[in-house]
Image (cartoon, rainbow, N blue to C red):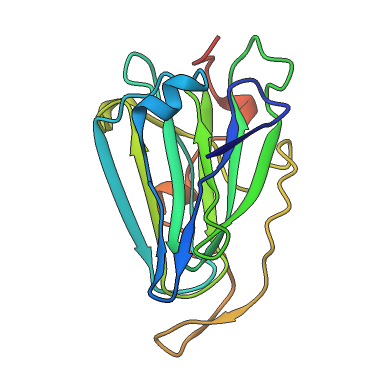
Length: 193
């Protein structure tokens, strides 16, 4: 596994070793001792998977408040997404800044997101499967988020009209009601220090 540091402390891009042959491929999705050997103390307690039928589905930007904050390991097993994180650590020189990366079934990249970041993604292909492992259980009473199109964040989401699988033309993104009503960064109480 190759570990690529980003300018954001603790935020890492991971490229696993992929073993290919005539049958296809094999790779280790997660091995705790490898993470520990490169200084990532991540103990998974829950694994999740989401499916998005259409291109243009946006999920996020989500986080969990302390003491139930989550570190995440995320990747795509089918399709492609633009994966985005926003640094919410008040003491960070990158507070309010974002990082984005394309994750896909073809590039096998993973993103390790430490506690203190809001996370979200936009599906770039139909029939996208997104996976994530977390080090803290889902706690709905500790949910939080930041509005995906907050101008202060300056995220360049690749948005354009699409034809959905149900035959209806739509303007993306396709959002949940919850994600439509998340606060702006300036209205977010201090959560991470």
